[in-house]
Picture 1 (spheres, rainbow, N blue to C red):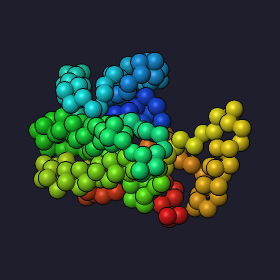
Picture 2: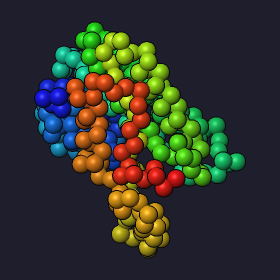
Picture 3: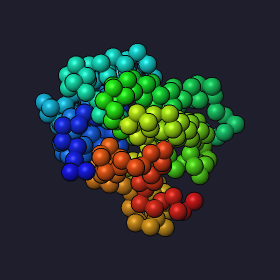
Length: 252
């Protein structure tokens, strides 16, 4: 029962693809009512068909503070409560050498990363505080911890998300709200058929010394860890970073 998510209402930002989509599917299978966000309507329509009528999907830009508050209000109108938030959405930029990073590069990553995460956290906070119970899961990256050539905006913005996580855990714990960060495997190393072998070779080398020798699966590897942090079973866990990367961090 401690791991039970039946009837819980959980917002998952960036749920229309990648890690967010896998998490949304896992939570729905565990009995939660998922409120999923995304930017592309076609992907959202597909997600709505996959999840079914007991869930809600909406086109929301996480960088839009008012939009996030409106989404939470719609979710409360529909389900009567908000139990959990998975702040997963963040725009990504191309790999760029540090000396070439522009203000726009930084703005995009910080607007959709730490700022978008903060707006979502602020939007759910009053409802969780009133209930005396809440779970917030933010998403970070091992690249933020270890550093990564070409990933300065992404790495720095993800470390800012971890800072927000720890601050919220300290400020909101007395309200029964637990806040933790998950650093997942990328779940993005799918080589297109017309790649010509170049990316396949890069990914093969990347996982040659990986403890498990494989990339993660969003639904079956990342989803269960997030579900734990959203459940009653995590009642004494807050302000933590959980590396859900199959031990990949040990390569650093």
